[in-house]
Image (cartoon, rainbow, N blue to C red; front, side):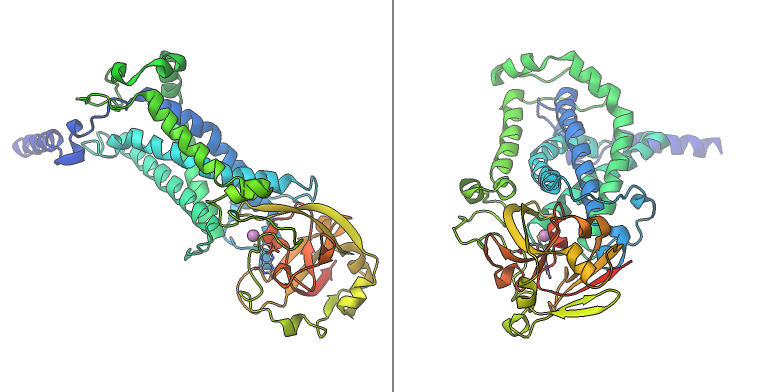
Length: 437
Ligand SMILES: Nc1nc2c(c(=O)[nH]1)N[C@H]1C(S)=C(S)[C@@H](COP(=O)(O)O)O[C@H]1N2
Ligand SMILES: [Mo]
């Protein structure tokens, strides 16, 4: 009995003392830059940036009004994750453009920081033995959720803004649930590591590090966490150089994509990384990004010609031709169209107020409206809008943009435009609107 126990113990000891070859051996990792300071600096940047992305993401989710159900709900099992949902306002009209711009551009800018942070701690992924105690095993498991959740959230976001819709469970659900896993694991990580971050940042002055050239760059003293290389190689780059490389990457990503959000002829042409940038905005009022073309959605000229009627449903039913709509009191307002994918454009919209349409079918106090498009395929063909979005004085069934008729690709004969509404909820090629109390 005792003999077996000691044999197990010595086997365990042998196992601990013999890591597999390659990255599991401490001598494999040799960069002298790795250490608590670099990891902490990058961590501090992420500690500011990621909560900002999370917050703007939560706002975007609320802006979708998923609690109206039906067409708006893509995350039916959200449960408690939806408790904070609130009536997304229509004012200020630029709010969604701002929060979603921060979300998308900020997310891209953080990619180099995230990658550098992962690089700085990568030896820990291969630490041997995998866990020294059950407590450490739990902690390492939480790191797996942290890295996995982070990579999943960033990857789904980036893939989505590149218009590559490949999510088996759908983008909304994957991005939402992934981000909550990420944030929960991040909170645990910050609680466990915050003191270490403060200590290692406090020990060295940023200014001193930024003055150190490559030749004078040396490894930090060995740390209990084991980030510092056991046998550091000669430096090929200073910490200043490494930080400049990361910051340069962030700036480049920002510079090549921000044009799609802020607009303007030069900025848009510079937005080479953004699928809705990289082009010169012409003088044609309909010359702004098209998310889904009429052809892509199976909308034909026959459907949108003189046969087209807008069906209004409420306490009674009405059918209106485009000419009849044009003869109603028209209202003009200028505000942004801002897509969840980060691009936006500011236009002058002219059309009939949604509140007027509600009143025409005897629902002057609507709770919501169900809008349906005549598109034949694909998503975004219908939406629920909330009471405050119907009653806003600039909420329109738009017929004209910048003083000309909408083009077919932009939703002719008529489209929804509600201030501060996520682009996707501004339904094009409207065929039916059902107002409910
Ligand atoms: N019927 C319908 N409406 C739609 C869409 C769609 O695919 N079908 N795309 C939406 C999305 S995602 C956005 S961002 C805006 C873009 O409007 P635009 O194509 O006129 O620029 O339209 C929205 N309205
Ligand atoms: Mo969109």
